[in-house]
Amino acid sequence: LIATGFLERVVDIVGGPFVLQDAAAVAPYGADALKQPHAPDLVALPGSTQEISSLATLCDELRVPMVVRGAGTGYTGGAVPIRGGIVLSLERLNQILEIDPVNLLARVQPNVITGQLQDAVERVGLFYPPDPASLQQSSIGGNVAECAGGPRAFKYGTTKRYVLALEAVLPTGEIVHTGSKAVKNVVGYDLTQLLVGSEGTLAIITEIILRLVPKPPAQRTVRAAFSSIEAAVTAVTNLIQLRVVPAAIELVDQHSLDALRAHSGTSLAPEGAAAALIVEVDGSKKAADEELDLVDQACRAAGGVDVQRAVTDADRDAIWQLRRELSPALKRIASIKLNNDVVVPRGRVPQLFELVARLRQESRLPIACFGHAGDGNIHVNIMVPEAERARLDDAMNRARAAERQLFEGVVALEGSISGEHGIGFTKAPYLGLELSPSEIALMKRVKAAFDPHGILNPGKIFPDGQAG
Ligand SMILES: Cc1cc2nc3c(=O)[nH]c(=O)nc-3n(C[C@H](O)[C@H](O)[C@H](O)COP(=O)(O)OP(=O)(O)OC[C@H]3O[C@@H](n4cnc5c(N)ncnc54)[C@H](O)[C@@H]3O)c2cc1C
Image (cartoon, rainbow, N blue to C red; front, side):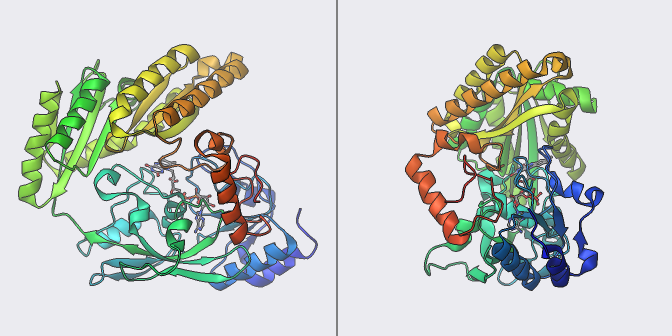
């Protein structure tokens, strides 16, 4: 796959210490959180945009597959070099270049860790809202490439709302700048937003200008337990009718609550509860306190019990820490889990849960759900427990069948098969469930315009893996 002389030219560009080639050294660069690895032939750790441009020109000339890697926390195999070739790990590009409190923006290199940017801007009274549960590990570049979202998306939106401008290297080596530092810009096509969520298939993002907002002075959090999913969803509807726009509304089902209890010794609701809600409001202290009362009222009116307000920062952190423990808790029950982040219009969340109940029965597999109720974005985890190991093929077939029915169901409910994690290679076979042949063909023409030789992250997004 790697042409003669390629290695030497890569070493010339980035320097010997920044090229990895032995099997043990490259192996970690072949996996992400999906845990379906494929080792690259070579790994380069470029230190500048210019080096990335030279590497792209070289790969394009020699038709070597090239995959960009952020922090490797993706769930759909986006950073996995399934066709081999070279991985460009951007780990050396990890600097916050500028925090501008007058223009409310930050300029960063792609591998700044999300949580570190949040801490840095909060120290000067600013706020970067996107909060994927992986924020202590994921990179801003990866967040932009996946358009990451988190609990706060209900009020604040996902990563795309915050990306003002990008510097990027095209697979053919040209360096381009999209957008600007100004908050308004309607000059030509919006290439910035085209690159957001492009899953490392169109360009390599080398610098990002992010919009910031003032840090809300007060945050208040409530958690409540419910005897049914419907009751929890009614509480969300009540809230919206009271015109409260919480920063976050998280829904956790009984299966996830039980897993959390087994994992952490505690949970987000008393034993036997069918669902829990975590609701966070923010704003001025007065507004947050008033909204907190309304949230309490909306939960109780829907039959919520054990309604608990987080009084101190420590109480609040404890609730969110438990929320972040859900994924690891489920992993303990089943090391194999198909983690789907489907999304439906908010009012159809109860229908989504009806569908999941049916799939649970038909597949005879545990399926645990939690997610962002305000956005209708629910993580549906189809699990293959250790007890199924003896008949793994059969269990995997049942899990895959349930997954396909889930995707068909959410499309029928006018939703989407992915709200956060993207398509990568795992969901590529299902693209046609949601997009028409003309839409897929149009996307392939866009891909071909950026990457005429199909060298950047081949095998991702499109069902047949071809660029054009
Ligand atoms: C425990 C856990 C919780 C998670 N929770 C959430 C969540 O709440 N919300 C959510 O949205 N996601 C979540 N994720 C998924 C994941 O963290 C996000 O998709 C994240 O944005 C990936 O960032 P990364 O730096 O790890 O990217 P990687 O995994 O390294 O790469 C992801 C994709 O982006 C591309 N890419 C990376 N950097 C660049 C760049 N500079 N230029 C161009 N392309 C690039 C890669 O080629 C790849 O296709 C979670 C993952 C884990 C493990």
